Length: 128
Image (cartoon, rainbow, N blue to C red; front, side, top):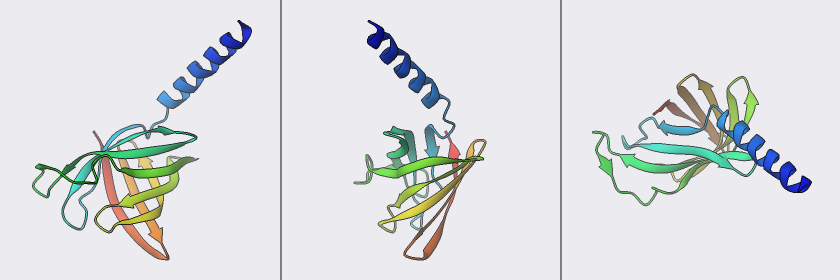
């Protein structure tokens, strides 16, 4: 019984910590090189945070079908303190995964990343 109580307490404690994570939730990306944007659902995955593309939109804001819906866009992302996160972000328009820095400021998220010395500004995402 003691083991069950300790396990239950650990699960509840982890759930509370995850709920307090400010990056969790849905984010609207900036438009990419093709004018497309998407909704990314950020959730815990192991000891990190991951984000999955749940909807995609064209430059006019109309929902579109794409093979990238359901794809993990954010991976291996961990908080660094002060609203900064480090991890990886996949860019569908360039078919590349960037080592990324995400900076959270209230309901906006600035996204930047580099791969093989080439850096890219991923724009500002907004909380939905």
